[in-house]
Length: 182
Image 1: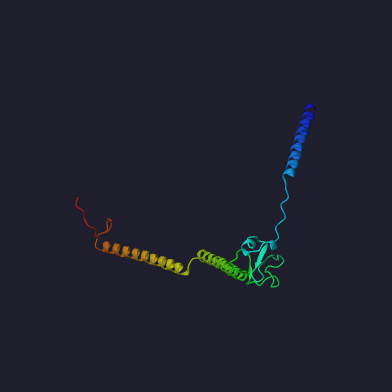
Image 2: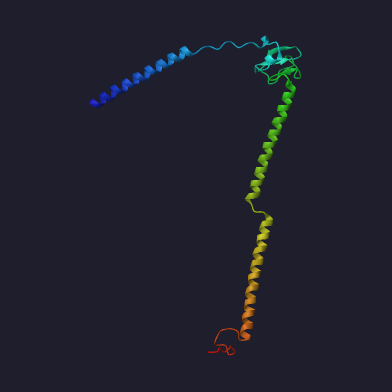
């Protein structure tokens, strides 16, 4: 019973210490936080070079003013600015050319990925099954090897027969075998 109360006191002390550290950290975080200054409106920028570095701003050369990019539309509508006169990101590239360039780049990338996938799939299917020519050559090679073995056996049988006929075989029960000098 004594150990239970000791453990309980230790747990309550560590819990109190943890609560104290947590409260101090929240208080210190609250003091350090500051609110950011309000963003500068795009209409204050009077030149293209100062307008386009901000992602939320769009420069229109037709009206020579900086306006907020209409985020509800993917492309700015003609009522805001014509695509050929709109600049976003850089002053030297109009929005129309930017869209065309990104479309071509995206299409090329997509076609390249599809071509690579098709090529990889085609190569894997070719490697997975043996080539017909390779099968045919291996079959012919095996047939040639078997015929060569058969010819070798036939040759050996003919040579043995000729040796027996002329008494060149070393078996002693043959009547015409050679006498050996002792």
